[in-house]
Image (cartoon, rainbow, N blue to C red):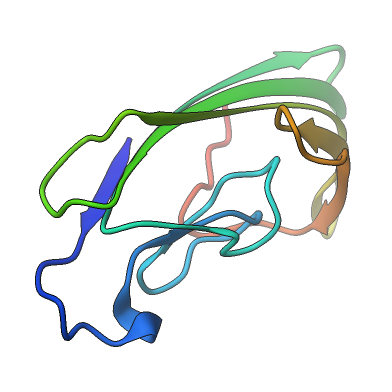
Length: 126
């Protein structure tokens, strides 16, 4: 879960909370099914659940669901709701895991992603 908010009318656009894309950044929350930084608001709350199943020592599948609320008011959870779902296939290699998948959010195009190597923030060797 993540929550980000801004307070004040003179906050520059670069510091206003944003949501979208596959990676988090300063003042920006990841939301796989939406293009990077497409959704903006004064307060954004995101929750995500990930599941992973190992078929063998090297092959695994993953699924995730993300839910968000967006508000134009500071310190508010808002009423605008967004959701995103993803599915992928991974392989463990000597260079780290490789992962290919798709993500979809209602009203948006299907987004495809390809990743090799570990992400230090989310490394989990379960």
